[in-house]
Length: 147
Image (cartoon, rainbow, N blue to C red; front, side):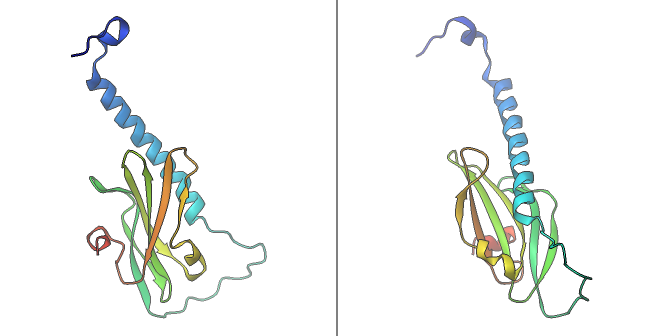
């Protein structure tokens, strides 16, 4: 049995644990917003010209969620996105050494599919980003991810 003296003796772990949880969720949300900007941001060339009329090939339907955890499900931005055939659905897993797993799901165009299978450090120290693409309708939704 350990005994503490001084300031540590009077601290309660209850409120500190709750404060740490809120602080972690705030940091995770900030991380996700930065990652969304980096990963899903569109770069428009200066001479893009007029927009092209939409073509109607067969589309791939994907699950979209901006912030999701396995424990709580989608916390922000649940939706469906469509991408032309030959593109993919993607799920980004943002993990750290303590085992937390925050996910971002979206559509990925043909031009962005080089990002489909990689692991890299995130801009936030201690976190890693693992991306995973799939090619069937709703293959990146929580029920189908396990398959």
